[in-house]
Amino acid sequence: MNPGLLTALLVLLAASAFGLWRRRTDGRMRPSQTVAAPAAPAEGEAAGPAGPITEPVLGGPLGERATLVQFSSAFCAPCRATRTVLATVASDLDGVTHYDLDAESHLELVRALDIRRTPTTLVLDASGRETARAGGVPRREQVLAAVAAAG
Image 1 (cartoon, one colour):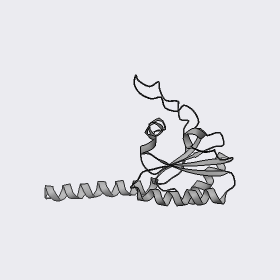
Image 2 (cartoon, rainbow, N blue to C red):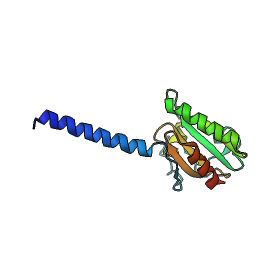
Image 3 (tube, rainbow, N blue to C red):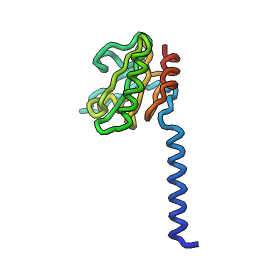
Image 4 (tube, rainbow, N blue to C red):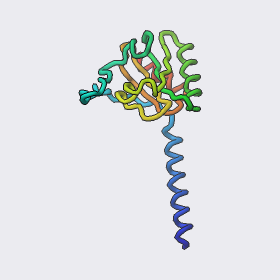
């Protein structure tokens, strides 16, 4: 078999496997592990938040039941779809609020919370502790289930 053809087939197979894996996991809401308090910052670094996400960080009050926090970026097309889903859930349910934070403007928080892509959605309980997260566009049903589990 031609080595170039074999290489092309292997690359095609690897890309297809990655695409299938990404399609299966993208947007899936999963329970959060407890986010440990960040280590002490090195000299000259700013300290990150420890524990729950507070109202001053969000720029407004936490929801009585749950808070949906979306990390977005300026040129992120999936962020618009996520914003629509989360805003709809927040408007449909009492005691649920939604915040859309620009990842670039909140780099300390992004690093402290280990946000690796946009959009990333965090579901916080009434005290501001993360209970679930999703990378990508979550489905409405998954967000509703995560809010029910948080509250």
